[in-house]
Length: 79
Image (cartoon, rainbow, N blue to C red; front, side, top):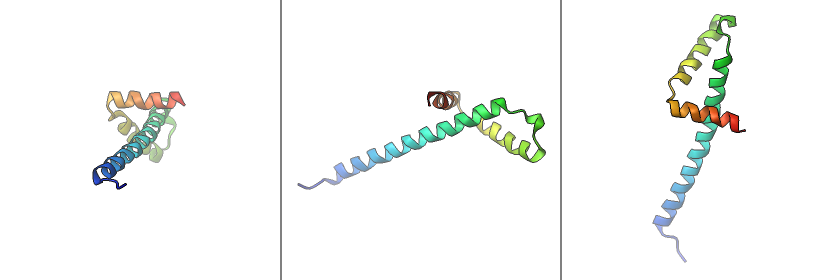
């Protein structure tokens, strides 16, 4: 019994989608943790160099769409 190229391609595509979805979940957890961190951060207590990095993080979190941010925050609550 031989495997057709179409079946192989479909299988490979399915595996790639699984990998991408797993990566998305991990990235959502990172974004959720970052959002939570930024929310509780007391920026006035940070050194100037750390405050600059915190500002970059805050801007990155704020640039997420509302739906993505909601998913990200939900992902850290679930686990």
